[in-house]
Image (cartoon, rainbow, N blue to C red; front, side, top):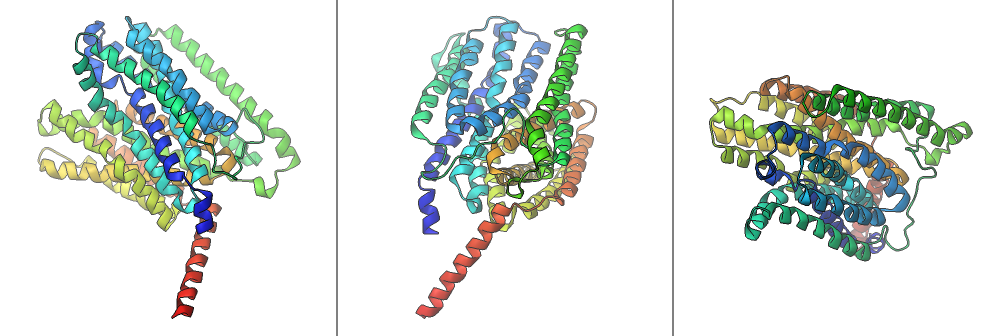
Length: 489
């Protein structure tokens, strides 16, 4: 145990610094949210235009997480996080200086890429923590980093108010770009990709995810479809506004179809030689693990984003409370991230990844069924308690998913994390689209049904060998220590 601690010396510092990088990514990603009404009034935007800006703010995150995942595996998280923060400062300044809808639109679309920062830290943290501690470490990283969005909502309006004037919001948003530049340079000088003496494993091939069987290749091609379908769905929604014509939407559909076909070609070209030659057993992994984790994260993180979007109005209409009160109640769903996501990771470390995820998914299904029963006849404190309980299972489930992601296959951790992370956004797009057709009760039941299907899928997960090996080592170490105590007695 002492030897292991020496190998990972300094890992808590790396965790803190990488978590702050992720925190800053989300802080920047959601720097528009506190100023929606201000920007609408200042630039005379329509409600429809504001809706488009909010939609485009998540659009490019889906492909960005896939691409960033590949870059992380190839160039290392230190370099990629540094470059991402530096580059993302540019659309920050662009957005702060914008004077028209289309300037805002382009800046917001580019800024959505910063949401891919999450993937980078997953690989970095996995390099600095042993398997038996990985769930908690990844949970802390994800949970506290996600809090950046809430921090933006609290602090940026205050900064704008302190600066004063009609351009206070511009200075506040520009400040987030300055923070990106400063921290990027600091991060680059302060971290390394791996502890001293540990090799950073890279994929043998680049351009598409490395898979190890023809069955897995078919699975990867099939699981890539929803990534493009989500972007097509966003395009379809925008085509029903006056901002994007049917012709423009058709062009986007064609581009998405051609991009998907090129992606299929890359998957084949990158993997065909190794599959023909036969992949050595030590290099093999099951893509089934990735597909199930995709589904699990789409259900957990996807439902979180969708529910956070509708909760304020739901509580306002159900209990006839003010907008401010409804917002405070809804914010409790996001605040649970601070403890729930690390909690899910810790439970995974303690009791096993698969078992923890199974329990959390069935609890999540039950909790969402409970949410569907909330009515005006309920005491509001009971509705809030149930909402926070549901939130705990959602975010603990996210922690459990990413306690397993880094253990699928070390050298493609970035790509696995990228795909699983992208599915979280796919889930959000799907659930928000479904919300437009269902009342809140049926919406919650739909998520409950999705959670139960995910519970069934999780039965086919295999406990990662790295976790089992670490657990056996812990048992042997405890046994040796017990024997020493017995001898001493």
